[in-house]
Length: 477
Image 1: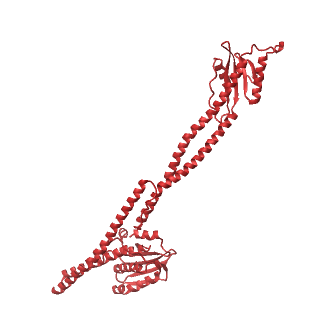
Image 2: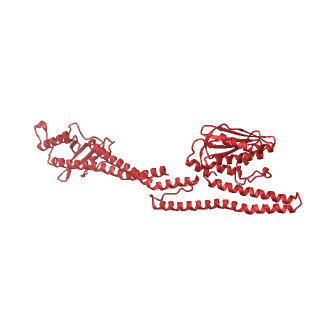
């Protein structure tokens, strides 16, 4: 959001600065040119006043010298030498009364001719078009010389614009430097503004992520930012408190309900046992009721275990995963042997960060599940390997396995394959395993085992898991 809001503010500020700077630059150029034009108008007016008293042109061949004309010519030459501006007074027939330099005459066409023709109409020529720094043009100003109410001649000046264009460019550079400085200030202000506005949003986003990854105690610090975002932060904290309270009540209810139902169920099973003594031996109905009662007791025990697993924190330490896995293989070997299943283990010493009790409980559930669904005469293998960052315990069996669709649901609470409904279990064992492993930053995955069977991979980190990884594991429960 910061990367989208900041450019937007910068673009808006740049547009405002351009909206102010461009007219200012145009106004500066116009002012500089107008200043030059006013000077040229004053100069042409002075030359027109001198030329007003010049009579017929002198005849140098006859020795006739017109002093006023000579004075005018001297003034024009000095004017050209000092300012480099071509100037001349021309009669209506285009012949010069006086001009400087001597090589300059009225052209047949162009701006000078247009200004001359306009001045013959007894008015000063119009102001020339604006000259920009990149244009190499001259400024032409023409004023009529009026004697006895008639236009007898025209004063024309043709001014180079190099100095004027340099002054305009210099002014533009100053304006550009001011605009750049203002833009830097605007960017700094935009950074501060976006930081002030978005800081609560970033904190809110980080806190939301923490809560989403299992750290339900995270809250937003209500400080700084616009009032609307402060109110949003307070509302978010209230919502998080309510959600945490509801989840806590839900977990407490599951644990309490499981615990409270165990005693009445135990009493009920005892009464059923006593009732069975009064019935003929081998009664199928009473046997079915006893089986269902025991199954219900197992479900309650598993529910309580799941609630405790989801609510408890892992006590992580450096653990020999091979030793823990070897102990569980040895513990389940008699059960597997009684069923006619061969249970083998390849568990070399390998250390990782784990909760030994939680890991043992998770492996019990996985190995129990593998032995339970493996037919007589088949093999269950437990292999411990290390790949650098993690240690894996892979449990494979040669049972019926699961379909691709079933693999996506295995581990869900109370889920059992339709093909295994007659097998003892509550459908919570693998869910408990996942919860126990996730608390320590571990994970459990399922896959096919060729040619048939199921592969369960338990993964634990070799390095101390970060708080975020552990919280992510809590969320995965």
